[in-house]
Image (cartoon, rainbow, N blue to C red; front, side, top):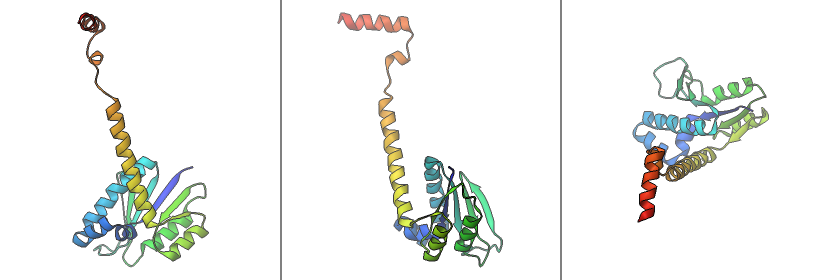
Length: 170
């Protein structure tokens, strides 16, 4: 079954110590970091991800959607909240999908549950992203260590045989 992860972007930024500190300096940098982190996470999980930001501090009055890596990033139109966008999206998705919604808004969480989707607390997503990244790095490190380079990888059979004979004599 296909899983769709829908994320209220500013809820995650304000729920993460690192992203919150970054947003206080440069909001755009915090958004970019979240997009990059979610791209890796979504790729590892194999999930389709939709990241929604309110039109907060945006100059444009129109809704903007763009594909960034593996995820769809949505900026709602002016005066339309991410919660409203997410609610309509969840309601429109087929029941054959597993829908997971990341939000800290209680009312939206209740609506999500009422529509058969799963609510994911912001803190849970942040911890799972950190754990997933750590596991990925650990697995990558182990696979690199197991790969070891052997002389036989670079020599033809005759030359390797001659080296083995020399080694045995000593």
